[in-house]
Image (tube, rainbow, N blue to C red; front, side):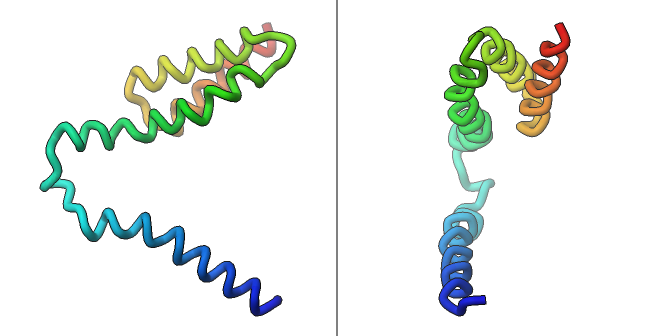
Amino acid sequence: MNPDLIWVIVVMGIVTYIPRMLPLVLLHTNNLHPRIQGILKNVPFAILGALIFPGVLNINPDSYLYGIIGAAAAFIAAWLNLNVILVVLSSILVLYGYTFF
C-alpha cells in the first residue's frame, strides 16, 4: 500500500475523531441547561428529516405518493419517539408492504 495513502487515512481519522471527542471532554451533560439538552436530543430526528426529504420527492419519478407514504411512516414513528433506526426501518417496511398493493 502506498505510504501517502496511509498518511491520508490516518489524518482523516484524526480530523473526524477530534470533533466527536471534544464535546465529550469539554462539555458535561449535567452542566447543560435542560432546554439545550432537549434540543440536542432532537438533533438526530432533524438530521434524519434533512436526509430523507430530498429522497421523498425523487424516490419514484412516476408517483410522488410512494415518497409521501414513506415520509408519513417515518414522521409517525419519529412522533412516537422511536429510536432513529426504528424510524428508518418503519418507513422501509411500510414501503415494502405498499409495493405489493
